[in-house]
Structures are given as C-alpha cells and as structure tokens.
Length: 180
Image (cartoon, rainbow, N blue to C red; front, side, top):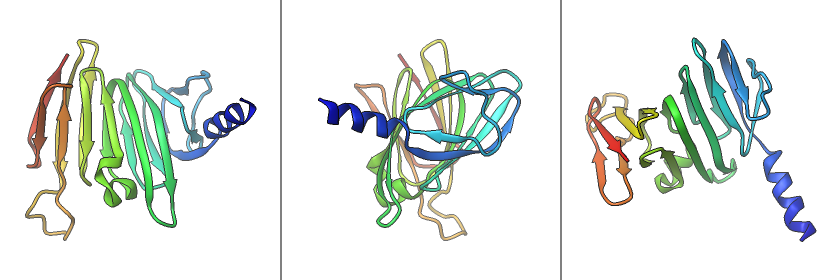
C-alpha cells in the first residue's frame, strides 16, 4: 500500500513540460500563477483566464497553444526520450486549444488522445484546433499538413468519436462538430 502511494505521488511531481509563453492570467489547479518558464507537471490543470493565452511545450516536442477562457488537464504523460515511446492524454474541459503533435504521436499515433466534453479525438501526427463550449459541443479543425504538402511532412489526420460514431478528418481546412 505504501509503495502505491509513493509511486502515485512521484508521478504527480514529474516534470513534463514548461510554459513557453504566458500572457495575462494563467493558473494551475493550486491557483498558482504560471509565468514564462513555469514547469508543468503530470496531472496539472491549466486555467487560462479572459484576455490571456499561453503556449505549453512538452518534453516530446508537442506544443499546445491555449486560448482565453480555457481549462485543460494533463491526464497522462509518459515519455521515454531514448525511444520516443510514450502516452499523452489531455482533457479539454472548455475553451480553445491548438495542438502541434510531437514525438509520441509520430512514433505511435494511437498514444495521443484528447478528451472533450462531447467525445474524444486521436491525432495522427498533425496540427489541429479544438474549440469546446459549455453546451457540450466541440468543433475540431484540421490545420495540416495535408497529403500533398511541399514540406515533405507526413500527412496527418484526426479521428473523432462521440462514443458511438467515428469521423475521420483528412483534409486540412475541414472541420467536424461533436455534440453530446
């Protein structure tokens, strides 16, 4: 029993990323103000207030740009920089978040999951935007790269699920709405 508590506490204290840019009022679940360079830990909830935004850089090079009036929690983040193996699960409770996926998704796309009020999303190495509101509705926009990009990047896509249905977005600029 003691080992389980120690392991659980160690995971909650594990450094997984950093606030690269903080503009305005950004706090964590302990109501601590987050500034440029503030560390992000496993299990943290990030709360971005009105007229504020932040960019979070994770150890696997995933980048989240978090818009105003947004709340998200890092439910899981495990990463081995030697092999690029890992798992990343985040829960967007409300607001707007832009993702640029990193090495975890590149190595195994099934290991990146985004939970939203009305469903879940899996990303296949790409850039996308999620906007969730209190109406239990989320809009997901695929930003790129597409199948014919000139940068030599692997084409990405996102897969949305409301628990019953699955929708794939494969073309940049296309979007889908998931409702509860």
